[in-house]
Amino acid sequence: MSKEEPKTMTLEIQEDVSSKKEETLGETARTIIIALLLAMIVRTFLYEPFNIPSTSMVPNLLVGDYLFISKFSYGYSRHSLPFGIGSFDGRFMAKPPERGDVVVFKLPTDTNIDYIKRVIGLPGDTIQMINGRLYINDVRVERKVVGMVEYSKEIAGKARAMEYIETLPGGVQHTIYEESDNDMLDNTDKYTVPENHYFMMGDNRDNSRDSRVLDLVGYVPYDNLEGRAEVIFFSTDGSASLLEVWKWPWAVRYNRLFTRIGNGTTLKKGS
Image: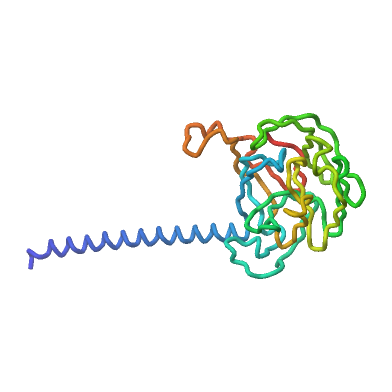
């Protein structure tokens, strides 16, 4: 009997170690599952990340900006819920956007594509561009000259534009760029925004395909809104690739981190 005791003790120790390993693995798995569920809940109902791929919202949003949109700002529709999990029509907990909001929405002509623009026209408004000037309900929107600027375009290199501070009805101010007051979209017919739709425009007026292009964007249905752009949480100037780790510290636009977007961004933060 005494000779078998050490073997019994060894087996007990091995079983105890195995049991502790299983408990540790189980706890780790549970932690990962809970973290994934929390991330899914946050992304679905609270905040979702997006990045800016074009210069259509310059100077307020730059290529390489990463931002959070608030999913709860306008309530929820099938287009605002990820992975196609919503199969219903309309919105619940609905709250309409305000003029001047920067919004991510599903492109009406292809709901697989996300666009980001500023709300310019509300349901029932008339919108028109005449010689580069914006008219809302037949009243010309005021703009104040800031000065000539140079900025980087994603394809054509550098471009020059006049910077203005535009004041929308209701008092919301934001900066815009105009390369010319006689570009293709600077003189338009009068648009009348249908009920339950919105008229969207980019802040880089001569380099934005927006609601002025009826066969691409046109009037954006309320149900297509995904959320309001809230804050830039990261920004890179694109000078470092994913593998060029040693360049990352110099590629980050630190002065843009945690910049609020909200209703009426008036000053550009870096370039």
